[in-house]
Length: 181
Image: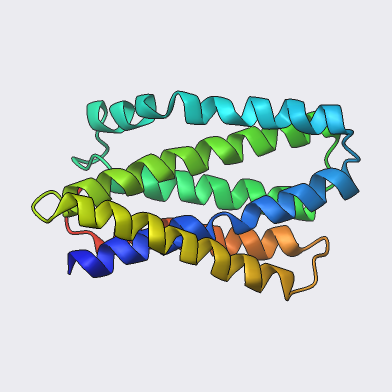
């Protein structure tokens, strides 16, 4: 059972990387970012990852409906989906796009923290070193698989809708397969 959950979560985390490709196309083609702006945005987007432990702390301290993780995973996945869909179907200026992309990144980081916490809970009683190696191996497989898929589909304006649907499903599924809160 732990092998299935571990592999599934790792593949899904690797699959989330597909959104990076559509963001790069969106930033270069749609909002015409310069290299300096692009690098500045990357720096700003790394901030939620730097303070990543705070998100796990928040979900543990402030449970929603007696659950510590499931509601947060669901809420942030829906917010991410809505923001990506909004960005795909509407014309936004550069500053609004920066804010939306930052909020999307914040949602992804929060869901990543929750998925890793679920992973730790599920693998707590099993051989941890083997699980870590398996996790990173399957995460790489997920990244390669979905990168291959991304390069075989045409990239156009509505690619963010496709990616947002994939990401929302990939972020929500781990909450469905876990028993705990």
